Structure formats: structure tokens, C-alpha cells
Image (tube, rainbow, N blue to C red):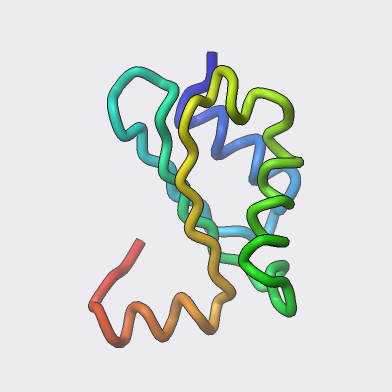
Length: 89
């Protein structure tokens, strides 16, 4: 079974410079929203970014992790979001 902490640590192991926030959307440990901010995403399309995270989490995406909402940003993109929406993590 996956937990918020396991998802966060698995991604952090693969992307040490990333800022990661994980929310369990239903409390059942199978529906998660993950926000990842890292310059490792620079030059990657949204699809490439998502595939990278799916590869990190492995075969459990679509299985034990039934639903996964990914929001992936570079540091510059995240800064602009914070400036325009007042969001901080």
C-alpha cells in the first residue's frame, strides 16, 4: 500500500532537488494529488514530465495507486504561479 510519505520519498530519491507535496484526496491511500517543482523538468513537455513520474512510481500507477493527479512545474513556473495566485507550499 502506498502512503503520502512513500510517494514523496520515492520521488525524492529519484529527484533529490525536487520540492514535493502529496495529498491523499480520499483518505483511502489510492487517490493522490502530487505537486512537484524542480528544474529537472526544464525543456520537457507536460506529457514527458508525467511519464517521468509514472516511471519513478512504477507499475502501481493504475493499480494500488488508482488515481494520480500530477502538477509538475519548473522553479520559474512555480514562482509565476505564486506571484499571480498567492500560492505557496
